[in-house]
Length: 344
Image (cartoon, rainbow, N blue to C red):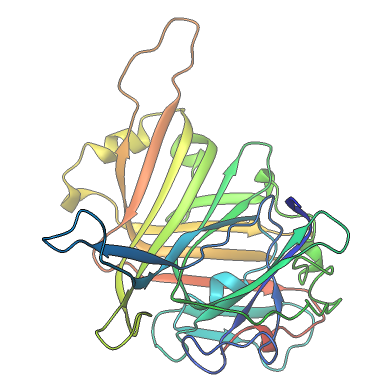
């Protein structure tokens, strides 16, 4: 019968045995942040056919390679666990006290370059029908980001690529302190997500409003390229290494003065190079801060003159330059120690 989202499941896990060696039976199952629809970036084989010179029909047909499965996973943001796998170094406060504890992450070391697996069940709508149960292995995070529209909840957007597939599926084992049976819910102070009013965007020590820009939507993204390559001895990718990084913050809204526009008109050597901070504050007043350094104002659209009854809608973008550093820090009033969910 028809496969539907109702009753379908997906969870992820850190591959404790190494790249492409994940096992949903032995690795800790972790719920995704809540998704409106579940993206499955499944690797697939490409096929090739060959005709010989004396035939109008194919004489040979074969699978070339298992091509990487790539896509973006978009969710209502609650906890940072999946995002943290992208960082080379993570530190969880020890001992975890349950009050104002911290998690930090950066790229100052490559102590734990995590790879992940994804396990999913695609539910058949017919009672007793044939469910589709599969796993994806050898996953790496290729981008991390947040976006939000005025009056909406913050969405997390995670780019990912997977190298391999598997047949093993294990029903999700709920851990009430960390999930609701399907989705993550570790930080109880963010169980309802983060509203746009709980977001602060800073350039240097100054908020956007004080710099003369009232934002209506934003999209922060850190591109963290990963290369996975095939070799002659295997149809499955067998080599991996990190690629380029790029950090941006794009906004829409309205300029209220010329401060930032005057900055943009300068030669880059004369422009301000400062930190970009995306700050989320949960219901208890705790903050998560995503920061990239050495950012400049990159582009803006504020030159055209609108109609008399219109307010000029503008775009504004910042980009990290001159060896920007990406960091994450969060403090939490949460009793459950997250150490088992973060490779530190």
